Image 1 (tube, one colour):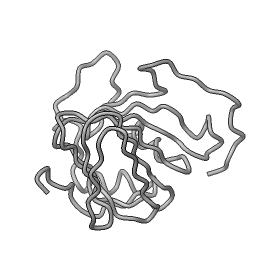
Image 2 (image 1 turned 180 degrees about the vertical axis):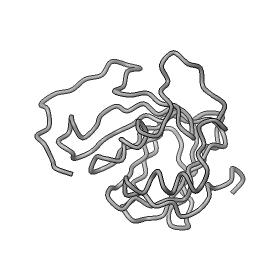
Image 3 (image 1 turned 90 degrees about the horizontal axis):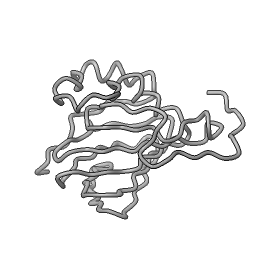
Image 4 (image 1 turned 30 degrees about the horizontal axis):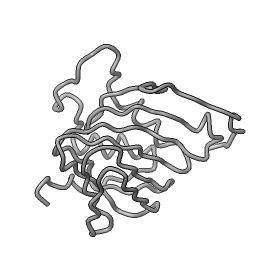
Length: 167
């Protein structure tokens, strides 16, 4: 990815985003992309319901961080569990297997990718929110085979199934 000069300032009003999609884990709102940061990072807000989880995966191109705004999330990192609550932060190095599962009724997180690029997966593969209500999760969960193929172009390798809520 060719880096471009970042813009000198950038602001979104509360509740706004560059894109807003329904995703397998809930609602993902892109707050900033590489276009605003010169490719150095991107950030999304993720709002997930209880029991939703990402598959075990690894990013080959970027670090990923989680800052929990609301709720409780358990993050499986290279075989170890990190329990995160509102105000907690975790950083996952590129190449490290990880996944998360929401343990509270709802969780809201800021997820940052550095460098940018992976945020494009959410807009490319998600279902635009528009004025729609949240669709049944079954309609936005691709099969494991589809996920492997869909994430590969973004440098993300699916390594296993999502962790269970009771793990």
